[in-house]
Length: 153
Image (cartoon, rainbow, N blue to C red; front, top):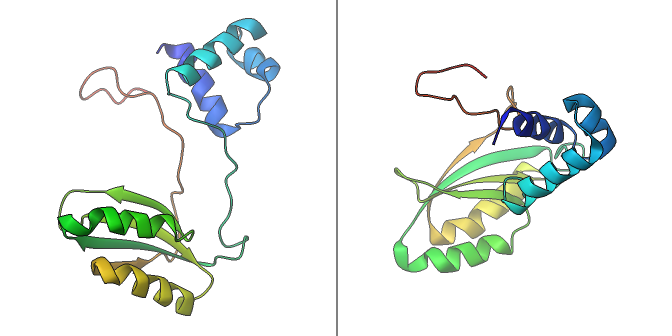
């Protein structure tokens, strides 16, 4: 990917609803050239989709938590099937270290969170951290440094 691709990606990450016309204007290309680049990035799997960012608190989920769990190998498939049935689990990562998985959950109350943890606890020992605030929310990807130690963006 070249500099123009990264400029396009930055603009799309900032506003997934930006028009091809506005995208073309901001990167100084024609609309067909920008359209082709975006389609190529989509086909390559770089752009996986376009979604709305929802504020969980404003949507009725004021409690957010990070939960780590250690799951024994034989139970991992069943555990993942369980998570698919719990919409409050908004993301789950398979990780190294003491935990097998780290999840982010949202809940309508502390009692609701406790109920969710009780369901998840059936598969292993959990460690829960309640999110008090998010000083650095999820952000878009920046172009990686061109060589080790290069901090240029």
